[in-house]
Length: 262
Image (cartoon, rainbow, N blue to C red; front, side):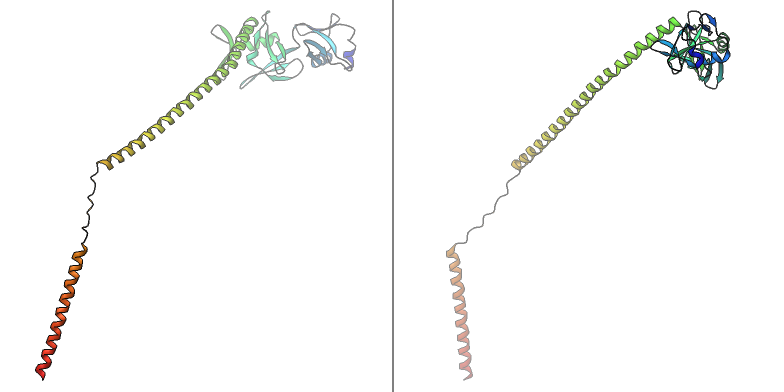
């Protein structure tokens, strides 16, 4: 890192072809170039080199990273970058620049990397033409490679779609609320109708019972004829008279029998 601090007083530039320059002179020392690629970073829209004590400003003409190699995988590709790292290629970020140069996003989408010409031609071997676009097919899906202008237009459309999709759920939620309200209202009306039916049925049943009671023939109450007291008294007197006669006859018989024995 001490070598980097020597460049503080003079301009350091990374050209669009991937070459490093110090005060207009190309840096050709291999380890120094590797160190520069590993040290470059972006902050606040500007590029710097990691120094020992303080960051060193650097002029980046195009991009800070370059794709040095392309590796075919089962489910796509991986790329080897100029800082010695390797990562999976995000095919959805491929686009063609104004100079007919291929780019992709790297480092979690924070940086753009430019394909070396030989790597670009290697990737071209896997391209297919569909609907007027060149692209790659992976897992049955086709990923078109657009120019920078088309990519910007596409991003604008996608942002509009995303915004509309974000706004759409609100409408859906409002429609859902209205639908739930309608369902609740329907349930209430159904309950009211059922309650009315029950009450009307009860009223009808009560009316029927009353009508049946009115139409039913009344049972004739059999009145017991009152027994006259005089008749009761006469019958009692007759009974006593008959008893007396019978007792008199018995007495007369007893007397008659006694006389005969004498």
